Image (cartoon, rainbow, N blue to C red; front, top):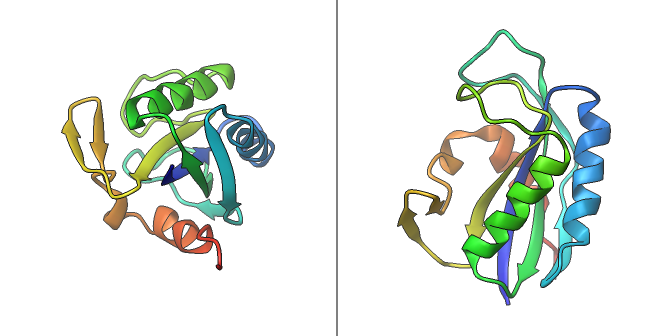
Length: 135
């Protein structure tokens, strides 16, 4: 199993309800074991600024499936929540980003690991720090 971290963000509809429901969906993913979830954070948008604030969180999972398979599972969850990909940094019903997948690195155009902007975003770093289990 590999310890992986997934960032969640939403700013359309009822983002608190959406992020909480997405955490539940992540808890139910096959071939994974839920480890921890951070608190929810309200953050200002990055890039395209004239949009509602985001609700963000980070979830830690242990996964047995390969990273690309897990990414496909994340895209499926996004689609169930009505995610459409239009303009970069646009408002969204749900965004799930695979931040880390164990110590795996990847420069594949479809999946870069660790997430390429992980270190630039306090709205990911703060919940990431709080989603790590204490053991």
